Amino acid sequence: MEEGNQTGMILFHFRPFSKLPEVQMLIFVVFLIMYLVSIGGNVSIFLTIWTNRCLHTPMYFFLANLASLETFHSSTIAPLTLASVLSTERTVISLAGCGAQMFFFIFLGSADCILLAVMAYDRFVAICHPLRYTLIMSWSLCVQLALGSLLLGFILAMQLTVLIFQLPFCSSKEISLFYCDVLPVMRLACADTHVHEATLFVVSVTVLTIPFLLITLSYVFIVDAILKIHSAEGRYKAFSTCSSHLTVVLLQYGCTSLIYLCPSSSYSPEWGQVISVVYTFITPVLNPLIYSMRNRELKDALRKVVMRLSLLQTQETL
Image (cartoon, rainbow, N blue to C red):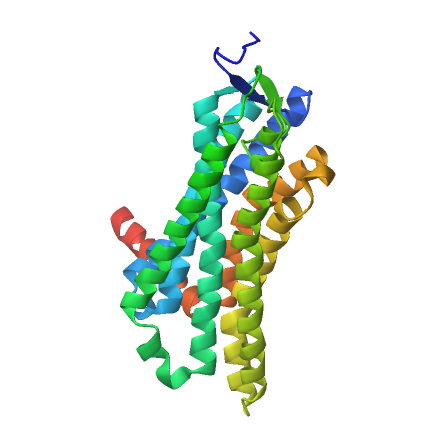
């Protein structure tokens, strides 16, 4: 590959998972299946909520937004990763292309994490203040919270991406990951990055630590309210509405915290590769399954949609 300098074209390429073509092909098939399943699951949840009036509530409004964010977030990484894995040659990406991928990855990922905190607040109001729920969680507030998640994610992503890509990159180099993430790209810079690492830590605290503390605080009040419910059926119903959200929170925040809240000096490319696969491919597959399996109303709505489609297909064949 042709080497560039500070004034020439800067190109990056991604580190392959394996040097063996057979292993690369196996990885491609597995990643493709997971990507299609995640897209299918999230799109199904979004369309099911959109088309069923009985699901037009704040909780499902936020879930539909989460499903759409997951769809776009996966699509920021998966197509280029699949092309890179399938290619027999190095897949290069320009400085501008790398910056665009990083921006959308941070933007959508940050909005995703903030939206999970919003969903925890929604569950807190529903369980701890059920009589005032419709008054507090008005549609105008729901829209503002959803848009606020996007706006905050956009601002943080724009600031961090612009700051990182103002760094000088001396030549075309290998990114020690399968996409343009912050730490691997930052390590390719030919300048001191202490300010950039500090900025990344501040953004990580804003996106991960603060929302997670708010989620934890919400669930402290939720658990206390659930324990005060006298009937076992009532406690089970209240817990079931929160269990799927709590499981997704642990998956999402667990993976991202291991990458972005650890000291940059202790970052391991190999360990980062494993966690990134879980975060970008496995978690998006699990999230729709968790919500559809643990939520009775959504499960029933999905079943009705499948039955309706099967009926239409049967009528067409006749």
